Length: 402
Ligand code: EZ4
Ligand code: CO
Image (tube, rainbow, N blue to C red):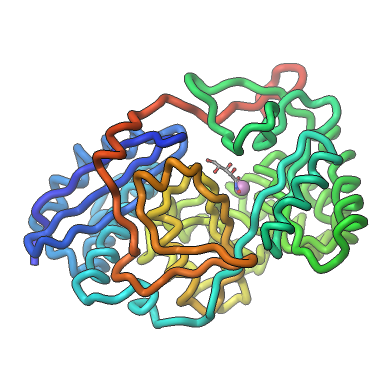
């Protein structure tokens, strides 16, 4: 069996997605997600100019070898752009294998470990009142776990909290906007949000919070400690994590569970964090972390240290990634939770999926491979739109040294 060709499809049904389609001489093709928010074209170029020419002619059944060819065989290893490209190749190859064997990917990963996959929703309010209201809406929709973000008095623009009450979308059209951030205002305010949410919704609901890397280790330690009474499911990306040892500060001061790594892209970003048990959840998603092949290894190492997965799953990760993640989450033992934000409804015109959300959980059927297909004619109706994630400065204009 041989790979005969591959192509990159960029479309923007509401937001940009990059999809890799790998063709074989058996008529079967595979799809991989290659979306890296704000850097879409860099990944597309790396795939088109560097990876695809080297992919053609290889046997798509040899996923492990192809993974190592594009990781270890490349002189300049790692990095978000190349790891996203490699993830897309890997997911497409697992899709092909599933289709060739007429079986869903979860079956290739050891079969079912669970009936359904716990997911969490987002409640993003500009004020505490709005956050309470949005949390109520997600509870009514059936969610058992909700990520709570809130505007902060005195800060104009809080990452991920829409100012205009529109859909969640941290990327803005055009060149990256510059925003101002004030960590002390944020730290003084956030515990009061969780106090009110617990007052209104009680103790059963799982609550999560995302710091988006906006603290130093000692600031993050203070936040984790002050949020302790509200029993968070996790505190996410409390620091950037580039300095893995920095997480020791947080652990020394608090029992709030820590999730990290939606911007990581290899197991080597995690080694100290895992082996010193400095975290509780792995955030690195399939689409940016080297695909199923690499995350299987990361999850296996994490499992030895009682660490679970909690993959990134915002709307800028395509339905191809979500489907692959649901297979992965269905199969592995140390799954924790999956982030889930429903895609804009026009995304369904382009991507045809086989997963459902029901009463707080998601499940995927036994369609072969990932179970996702792409309608290329529909994709062509939504051309690429330039959009970038914001840059933040302190209130006096200094760049942060997070
Ligand atoms: O900032 O997906 O946990 N979710 C997040 C997301 C990410 C965006 C980046 O593209 O932090 O909002
Ligand atoms: Co996050």
